[in-house]
Amino acid sequence: MSSPEHKQKIWQLIKDIKVGMLVTLDDDVPHARPMHLVQEEYDGTLWFFTRRSAEKVAEAAGGHDVCLTFSDQEHGVYVSLTGKASLTDDRELIEKYWNPFVAAWFPQGKHDPDVALLEVHVQMGEHWKAKESKVFQLYEFAKANIKKDAIPNLGENQKFGG
Image (cartoon, rainbow, N blue to C red; front, side, top):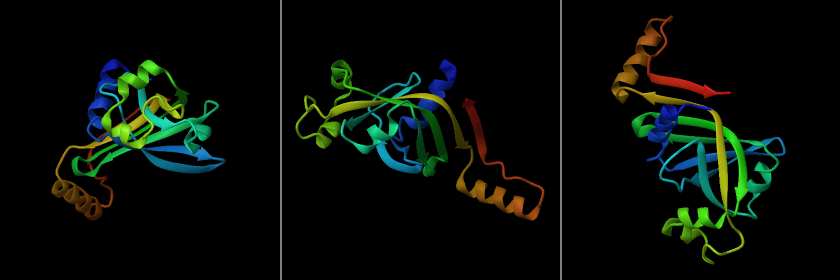
């Protein structure tokens, strides 16, 4: 788990990315697919619309861990989050998070019995944020290659939870 301040930091890193890759296990084989955030704030739980009949629902059932990754190469932001997924058909939450983007994926509307929300309770993760330009990063790589004992300093890296 993380502090309220750290949750705010995670949200600042991922809120503009919007689309993360959800990784589940299909038997013992990782399976990733893009998922679009639907919330406007983060308290340790991430929300995604899904079809109740989707493979990811069965793969995440039974308290299995899932992983979500977010990446923004332009700004040097990389986030990996691990947690437990569960399915809900809470009508109040569906109403709260429903929007035109989601509606495009569900032509029968929000009352379609196959519409559900995937809820991911984040338990641990890691994030990286480059603090400098690409030119500076290239300089750090070159310096590390010249000075065989130097490691490139590309910015912030922090683990949490677990």
